[in-house]
Image (cartoon, rainbow, N blue to C red; front, side, top):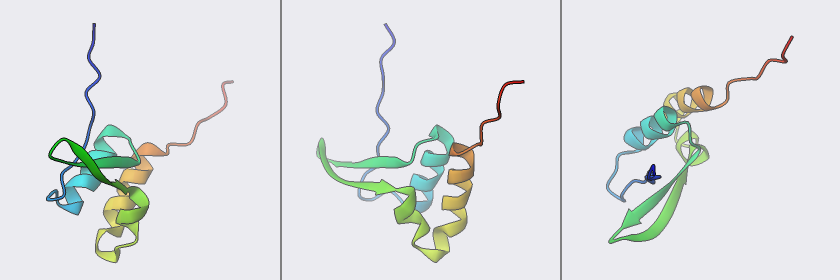
Length: 72
C-alpha cells in the first residue's frame, strides 16, 4: 500500500523554499508545523503579497494553473 506523505514547512522555512515546494508539488497551500502541531498555513496569496517574492509566486502559480484544452 502506498503511503500518502504530507508536505509541510516549519516556521523557520524561508519563503523562497515554501514557494519552490508549492511550485514543485503543484499545491497552493502548505501547513506550517511545529512540535507536531499545525501552527499556521502559508498560501501562494501570502507569498504574492510580498513584492520581493512576487515572481516566485507567479512561477508557482503558472506551474499549478495550466489551462486545459478541450479534446478534439
